[in-house]
Image (cartoon, rainbow, N blue to C red; front, side):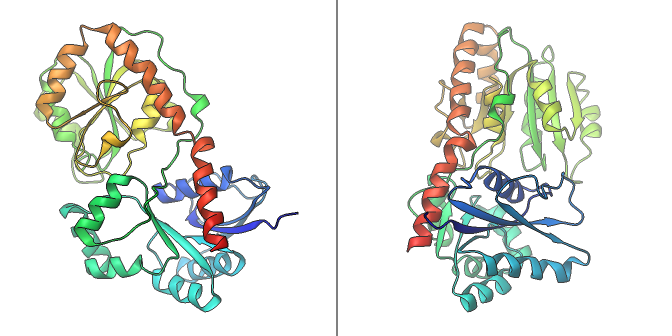
Length: 356
């Protein structure tokens, strides 16, 4: 029998965060005939514990105080693994030392474009761009999650990643039900940190279509009082819902015709795939390379300005047949990014790293 590869997924799979949720998806979908998985949970996690629920997955619970158990958890995972996946920056100096001391192989992913705004955040967290670059140099392999990201970040910060992108997947595609009624309905925007996601553009667009209901789901992260902004603009056609669960989101999408994500700085916004799975196409800006998965006018739209979005809405609200065609295509888009499909790429790369 072929030896199973032991993989450590360095995220807290019971706590909401993009990298943590990716680790949870990997823990679920990696083929347990080929891999034994080690990962972490946090004592203060806001998601259901996966202890003893996923066959072939071993979990270390980081207890209180985390300043001690965090180090123990990463040491435990690296000690047991053949290959460590460390997508997060925490404890990176400690992890670098342990990986080198134990002679373990590792990889990580870059999951955003480092434009000027992102570089400011890097400096706040790491002290300098160079410290961040150093935190990514010690891995056996480093991947971007889109090809555009690979090129952009190399030109901006000289961060070199593998030529092959490791795309993220979408979980539970089969829970979505594609649209069957193509009369023009509501428009929705979904996201956290709504200021960065372009909420002001979204509200400007809503002002131009007072006869259409605009839904807004997510958090302002304390940067803006959304309800106060809506009231100031007298936008009676905008309904702010706050944070929503995945179940609530799926219910909302049943009545929506379009999803708008007017963000200028993204990595790979999986929300465009989650809405696509429900047959709701997205209109997005092209600054972060969305053309890599969205084909303009076929399974969504990639535009440059808020005025472009207004023009599209004006055209589409009178063309239900066009929405029907594109809605069907969006479901195919989402299916192509099902974790059950994308996990094969991750498995191939992990085995390649293990055999190097």
